[in-house]
Length: 108
Image (cartoon, rainbow, N blue to C red; front, side):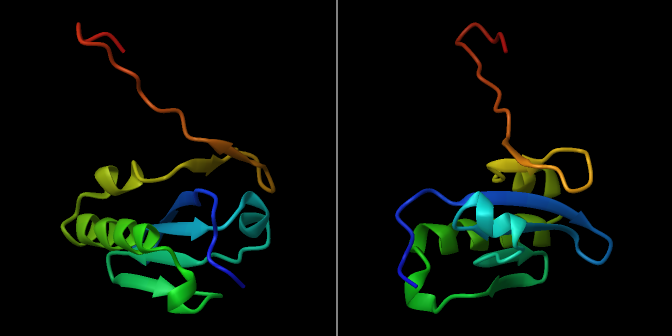
């Protein structure tokens, strides 16, 4: 397995035990197979299915930031790191997260 060249698919999942877990996937297909590369929660950052040298530094930095935010109780801020979200139906598909675009006059 080599280091990914594409941007990650990051999904935020609410959980009972941790409140929220963010998971980094190499591609949407990995989400479908539940094979995340990194996960972050209030408890820390965990690496899965890869060696450390195969994980891009920017992914690790983002996961550590997510952990810091959740450890401080700032779950809404951590959730903003997600790039995709599952559709509401069980077994649904991933869709890109809608981002707010603001102009200088304050319109959204």
